[in-house]
Image (cartoon, rainbow, N blue to C red; front, side, top):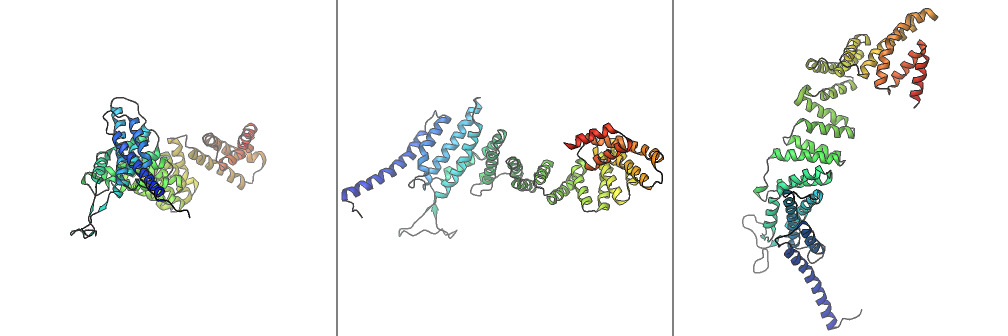
Length: 417
């Protein structure tokens, strides 16, 4: 190994010291740059670019002062953006919001590094008599915390601004930082009402949903409801997210909570519960719940159709027919209701054909009028929803039996595509 001469060693040490001083000079230079009185947004960008190498240099990245200054630059840049808004200038909303977001991370790093142990004359840590823990002192924390406190509500505002420009990730993060700051206990000025936090969590949930994180969104909507923001939309958005995830069990559970709170003011909740009872073959419970819903809205076509389906499963289609008929009386565009009425007549025709001893023209004379009764309901349902295989097969048979060749050919062409 080559030995270093005294002169070369001194030169090396001097060079190392120069590099360290250079990094410290960058911090001082950046600090001086933002002490001016006529700074612009770009001036703060320039000052941060000057400071930036010090954030990664080994000699300066472990100093609280470096990160406290980075936080100050970003917060003051945010303030400058806000000043520009007040005088009617156009600003980069996304850049403004992210200046605030970046400041949060820099602030926390500064607070983490700004902890100096107090030593006694022998160089040992002094112990606090009350806490029984080593005494510490800070140099920059008070200023860092004070700046964050002054900008606490800005994180809430920035979240809204970023959401408005469709920066879902930025909005989510800004609202997250707002809530985290509100949970700090090192300064009473962080205190925020639980209802406010709950509302912010709700909007954060929407941002999470918009950016595709439905699991996080569901959690945030639940947090919002538990915190007191239990408005209807906090349930509805959660149901949408659960639907996208195919979480049927979660949907039924939440629909039950929403129904207990809002009743039949929105029929979607009770319909979810009714369908769950039907899917589990608990027809009596389903029927009771439908009756309860119909007592508040006797003309709801969907509920009437559901009632008919339950009655049909409990008894027969003849007993269900009055509900199907009432369904389409209330809404003749209810495809399922039209199909169910048509199915009643179609089944009647098929059963008559199977059980009759007649043949040929005499049989046709008996059953064709029943097919004709079924046909308009089936056609109406097909026009609304042509994607019902059972309906398509029934129409084909009706057209064949009645000699409706043109209609049969048309439906064959349509269903081939």
